Amino acid sequence: MTSEIQTRADELRAIAAKCRTLNDFARVTGFPMEIARHTRDILALNLPDARLRAGPATEAKAVPKPVKRK
Image (tube, rainbow, N blue to C red; front, side, top):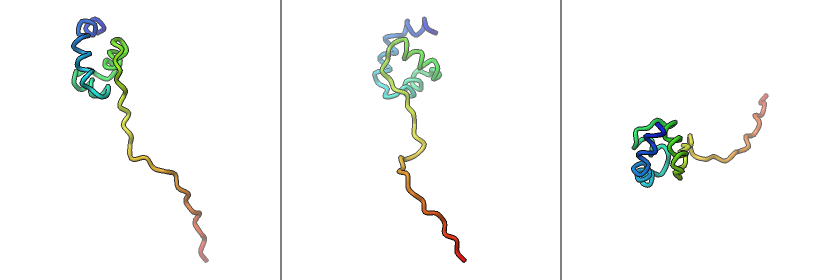
């Protein structure tokens, strides 16, 4: 796979220039994420991993203790 990456280096750099994240790059090229990461390392591409958040950021809130009622 390394030789294919090196032979297609110009093409892959052009594709990477149009992508925002490594996930976009992998989707466009059809490479699995492992190969996309390997390509990023070999060609020194400046593509960040897209670590998607599970939800909106929340602030920690104090919860009052329950009160026993008689």
